[in-house]
Length: 335
Image (cartoon, rainbow, N blue to C red; front, side):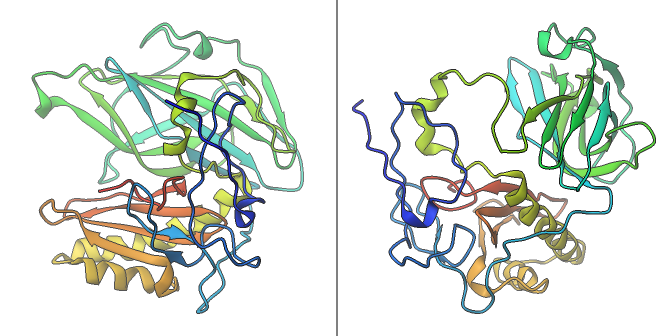
């Protein structure tokens, strides 16, 4: 495969992109960048000729400029999860904590976690520090240390589990909600749609907190080239913590609106889109369509700063995810 030339549109020049190595060249085929005043992705989407066929964000909606700021909560921190990875039944997920406040935050040892199902009933599982109860993974077995986060810095802790269910799905359990206590004495933060599919193993390993991003945005850790970077054109834009803080409050407004619709039942793509507009998102920034599956509607909303909120609404389940836009166009994965 020949190399592709890197071409970053002017309207994307202030955004944080995934790591691109010298040996990995990417085309950013993003529409709506002709105007020198075009907003960063997250404004008004325009049709894309990219591979996905999904809308590509362009200029901000004339109905309401896309939000570019978000206030820090009273706790001074914001938490979110990264998309889980899976291999041969072994699953892992990282929880990230962003210090959005104006003073240092000190993390010690391991976060506390609580698992709940989709109906917010506790999921019984053995939670251990380090990887030994689940698998041997060195990064989970580092000695815990005191981590001091300056304003703007990010820490991460890993969660590890197995799903070995092959024949008794009726006994399998999945935790859809995660309660995180970042430090002793701190209030728990609730994270939704985590999808921790424990199966029948019911064992979870937790790794210690570690700093992963400096206040200047520089990532800490392994920066060597990786095989997956050859497919960087298929990735999403990496959201900075400040950009993610635009998406997370938007997800918090979307969830109760769509949950009301789910409980009521009989929803359609049209009614989902109408409900997305009720929290105040402009019509040009909210989309919904039937997926082809029975009684399932996919949706996506662009709240600003390159963030997108997307998911699916089903009669028994609602998912809400915050991500960056996809390089080949759009917010949600192609249908």
